[in-house]
Each structure stands twice: as structure tokens, then as C-alpha cells.
Length: 348
Image (cartoon, rainbow, N blue to C red; front, side, top):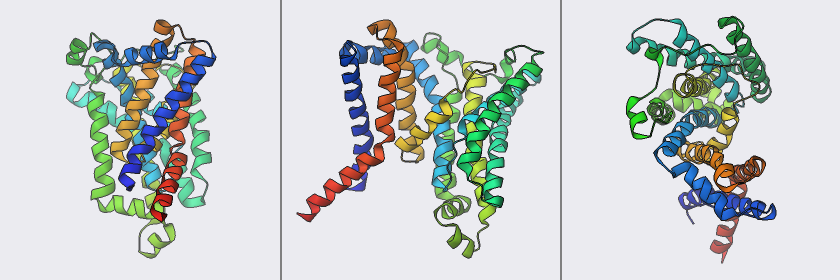
């Protein structure tokens, strides 16, 4: 069994196991799993509106997954994608409501502001890791909370005590009249093109540039990279900044596309944390991240239909979705057993 076959089988088996255990949970709880999964399917593909909303949900997951995957590929664990997304969200919304500019300037400026904000937020743990060897996991986790409460304060300042920044101007919006017309006025927006472009950008940086080679080399072995003349500290910081920029762009998708504003939050969005599992499911590859984001985005949106159509309580739905995600996150365990079985066959 080749590595390529194993790479395909691992996510497929993970999803199937998740669905089976989820079905058992529904049966034990007294609900019909067939109706439940049919409602899930209809929530994802039931009509043009559902399809549009599903793709809209997938968009920030692609960028959050890229943020985590990029850090993983360069030897870092960016657990602060959620916080970087939140500051990117605020930055994009602030630029979107504050300036009066032509669209060809205003929209790119708002998107760039989100990427810069996310990158700067990731710069701090990158600097501490490079200069003082402070573990990035600890710093990024703490900075998630700082981001949440800081942006809440900034929103109140911008809105004179209100709970949201107000609607961004049309010149900074990612809304698409074309998508609205073909998806029955869903919130699907042009951000999906940006997300897919960033997939290509990550692939290009890591596989086709000297910078990408150095970033991967430093992540693989810092001592060997330093011996080869690479600037280890610079590459650690650069890796975190690029990862944070991807996360900031995920926030821009929400600010400029889905919601058109930034509002105070009582808790995290969850997109940044789910990005970890998206990256793991995609084996930290750009193309794999797309498939991971499709799974998570579909589950998140489609599950909203299960209480309405199948009468399954929200709590059970959350458990089922969490079980599927759990098995996906355990993909490495499944990979281990597949490789072990493969070795036994070869030994015979």
C-alpha cells in the first residue's frame, strides 16, 4: 500500500468512523440517524441558498487552515489563529467604515489591513520564540484572549459605546450581486476567490521560492540550518507573520463579506481553533486544506438544519459534529494502524 493510498484512506476512514459513531449516539438518544443525516445533507445541498451558505462558511476555514498548516510546515504551532483572525476582522471593518475611497483602493486596503493586523499579532510570539525561546503555543494561546478583549474595547471606542462598528461602506464590501442571484440571496461573497488564491500563494511560497525552502529547513532542523548559513531567528519570525497574515485574512472574509461589520464578542468564533483540525485533516498541504475546510464548513452549516428537519436537539447535534471532528483529528492513529497492517502484509 503506497503512501498516496494511505493519505487518501486516512481522512475517508476518519469521516466514516465519525459518522458511524455519531449514528450510534443518535440511536442511543432515541433519534433516527437516517433522518438526522438526511437533514444534514439537505442543510448542505438542499437548495441554492444552502449551497451558497455552505461555501460561504467554507471560505474562512480555508484561510484558518492555511494559517495553521503554514506554521506546522515550518516547525511552529500557531494556536493563536483565533486571536489573529479577530484582530484582522476588526482591522478590516475599521478601514471599511472609516475611509471614503474608490472601491479599487478601498477594498484592497481593507483586506491588506486585516493581513497586516493578523501578521503583527503573530509577530509578538514569533519574536519571543526567536529571541528568548519562549514556546509559541503558550504565547499564542494567551494572545487569543488579549485579542478578544482588546478588540471588544476598540469596537466600543469606535462606536461611542455601541456593540458594533456599524456597516462597512459598499466600496469595501466583498458582496457579489452575481452570487446573490444564483444562490437565492445567500451571503456567499467574492472572498472565496481570495481564499483559493491564498492556497496557491502558500504552495508557491513553500515549494517554489528560496524563502520557502529556508522556512521549511529551519522548521525541520534549526541547528543544521544555522550551520548552512540561514538566519534562524529571522525565519521563525517570518513564518509566524505569514501564518498570522493568513489568519487575518480569514477575519477579513467575515468583516467584509459575511457580516459587513465587527461586533463585540462574548466568546471566540471557533474558526481559528477548527483551523487546527482542518490543517491536520489536510496533512498540512495547501490542497489538503481545501478538502478539510469543505468538510468542516459543510458540517458546521449543514448541522443547523438537523434540529429543524429531524427534530434532533442542538446538544445532540453538537455531540455528533464533535465526534466526527474527533475522529478526523485522530487521523494519525488511523494512519499508524494502516501502516502497521501494510508492514505485516509485506512481511508475509
